[in-house]
Structure formats: C-alpha cells, structure tokens
Amino acid sequence: MRRLLGILPLAVMILSASAQEAFQFDVFKTSAGDLKITFIGHGSLMFTFGGKVIHVDPFTRVSDYTTLPKADLLLITHEHRDHLDLKAIEQIRTESTRIVLTETCAKQLAGGEVMANGDVKKVDEVTIEAVPAYNLVHKRENGQPFHAKGSGNGYVITFGNLRVYVAGDTENFPEMKDLKNIDVAFLPMNLPYTMTPEMVADAVRMFHPKILYPYHYGQPTPASSSIC
Image (cartoon, rainbow, N blue to C red; front, side, top):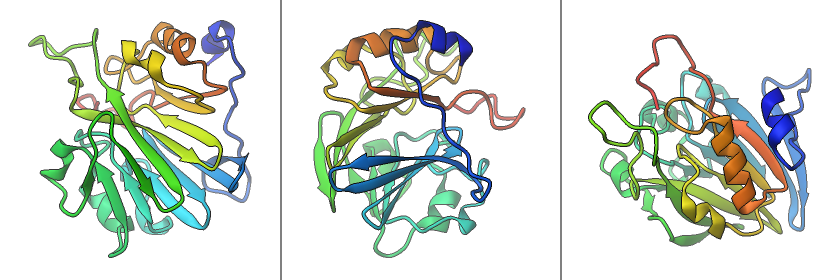
C-alpha cells in the first residue's frame, strides 16, 4: 500500500473500521441516498443501497455467510472457486434473489441472469455494466492465461450518480481506457494471477478513478495456492 500511495496520481481512501462492526466499511453519498461498501475479504464485497443488499463473489473462507444479510442481488465475476462458491451463495440466496453471472458460471449455478462483456442491465435501482476481465501477461505453465478473454466479467455498478467499478480477476487490459466516469474502483493485486502494483498504476492512468481500493491481494489460507 505504501508503494501504491507513492506512485498513484489520486487519493487512495483506506477502508474505515468501526469498533461496533465485524467488517471494515465506507459510506458514500449519492444522488439516490447513501451507499455503504463493506469489505468482506479476498475478492468479496457487500453493497447496501436503497434498502437492498448486493453481494459480490461471496466466499466462505473469508466469512460465515450465515451471519450476513441475505442477498437481494448477487454478482459473480467468474467461475473460479473463490468467486463462484456455491456454499456461500446457498447461505445468502433467497427465492427472490437475482443473480448476475457469466455463461460459464451458469453451467454450475441455475437461475441466474447471464451477462457477457458489453451487456448492460437495470436491476431495481442500480444499473450494471459487464466489462472485460482477463490476463495478457500472467499465464499457467501450459501458456494459457489464468483468466481468458471473454470468460469473466468485471462490473460497473451505477448507484444514483456514483459509478463503482469492481474489476474481478484481471490485468490492465487495453479496453480499460473505455471506462468512463468511474468514482470508485476496486482493482485486484493477487499475484501471480492478477495485477502487479505497476499494472494497477497503468490501469489508473487509463481511466482515472476518483478513489481506488486495491483488493483481492494475498492468499486467504496457505493451502489456497491454486485459487485465482
């Protein structure tokens, strides 16, 4: 984090902690009311807005989801097990939960609404844009990228007048220059699967978010080396 603060040309907000809360969170004012962003851990986030709860990539290794609010909306970025955790989803899903996911994820999880890169969908009071998420540099031993182009999604979620970009597992791909008016960005730094600090800095220069949260860094347990 110190290194990022030294090279990124924008303010980096640190998640604030409350002694009364189990998780760190920040609250943002929007034209349609407050948005509370709760950092659950790893690549998992929770948004609370307009009386609705949105979970992103819930993962049982970072939280007991039986203790968290049920999901009105679930966003799943891709099929890797630290993002598509069927046990976590079962614990927060209800009959009325809407699920947005990729075509590959839909093969494992029924009842979702598939979005591909470039799709836009309105869900209740928020607008969701599915954007690319993929590797160009970091690859497996067989030469295949850890995250192939077109398989996973990042999501830009518009809450009132506030636009939040959750990148998912990705590197700094060229299409990031097409991202517009991003207020808050979550960019991953889980090496070797996603971005180095230098890649994050390059991404920031491409689309200039007002606030950056580096997230999804490190490993949740020593045994999780295959997680990406």
